[in-house]
Picture 1 (spheres, rainbow, N blue to C red):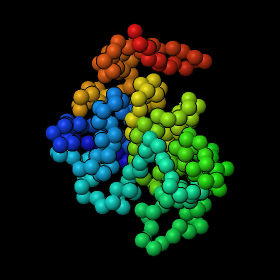
Picture 2: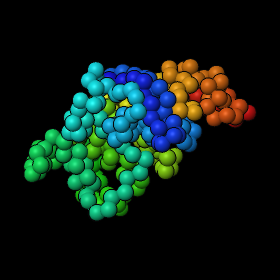
Picture 3: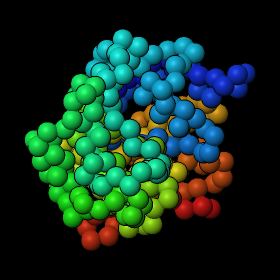
Picture 4: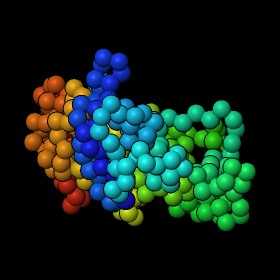
Length: 257
């Protein structure tokens, strides 16, 4: 399932946040979204989800305009994993995952045993099956992010939008979430993930979009950022990208000069 943004512009009053944003995330691709604070990453996510209506332009899911889709149809196509998830009530992890079934149910319909089995299977596949009976507000931030990913999978949407999902996590949980997103991409999901860490983008994404001053300054393969020039412009300080080899695998690190 592909996602295309075509000529998206958005403003808060007189303040332009997005100016003529166009890109395509192909079926099964992993796109990383980079940008400084206030660059418009979260606003773009909300436009892609249909939460905000752009001043101009449109979003297309596999060729169909988002404007032509109702709320349930959008939910069947796009799932959202926010930066942080706070649950007001003490739902169990299993119940929190089952909330992803809602778009497929009628207003008074409840999840059946087959849906509960699907939720348990999804938790097992993500390596957190043992959390099913625990309360979601009593688990770690990294575990909670994986639960939100499980809910997105159960939602059966082909496109996953992750808005800075590692921003408040320790290093181990950051890697856990990124590796999970990468595996889902390899299974055919289309992943768009925003991050403040360029090394994460270089390590996991197949393509990178860099936002600065409301416009895209780079849209292409991750390899195109390895000379450090785009990142230096993006973060307004001299940076270098150094490729290193560890255990036969090449990785890139970002170094301030």
